[in-house]
Length: 277
Image (cartoon, rainbow, N blue to C red; front, side, top):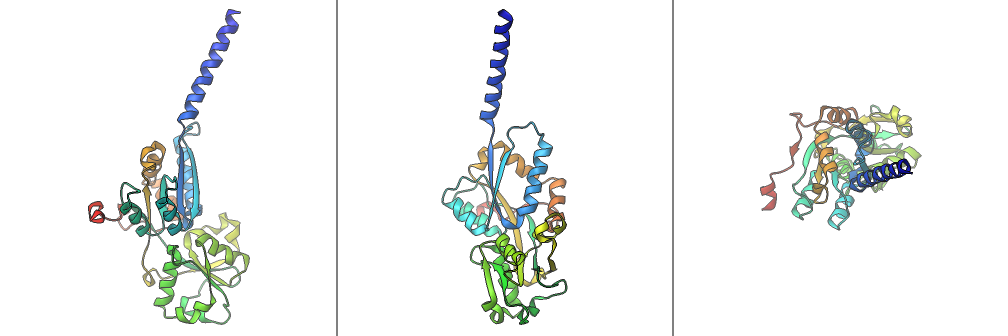
């Protein structure tokens, strides 16, 4: 009887420990621009692997969308802990509104490509999009998607925006824009290199071809991340941000076509005091 009681006490103690561990587990919610759809999934997976598979504080979920719409949700009180934007102005706006501790950190630059599943576009330039062969061209909505804004800038720079604007189909974000081309709904999509650079690993993009757009034809796509006020209170969120400065994380980003800052270091987007003025 005494041995049975000892066993019961042991089981009870283990249950208390397990309950305590689970109750302390943090759920970190990341809001991220759609151009990070593949790269960020790998970054999260690698982070968890390095932290150890028994770490119960690794509950990380990622929600993808356009930078503008995600930042609007954060302004409205959405409980995100980390925000990844494809344009630094959105993280700066959140800081000015008092939603984050700083204005965000510039960690990489994105690149635009012309992409198609219907045509071989490996040598196609933006100036050739006026060709009647290309009846429908998709870009992300410029009003809230940085890649759409930069696509429009590039088309204006080449002087053919007015000629092709009636052929333009707008996607809610860069991922939906890619889906339009993937489904054959449009002839051409102007999307993120990060979605197609490792096409062999993502069957939905394997059948397409792409050509890189000259980055001097538009403003930079400065990728930034920032901890929200909620995220500042979470250890796992801070650890994940630290992981982004590792060689492993930088290698993953580069493998998907992101370009690192010239000095290889992540840098604050703007001086905090400057933005407070």
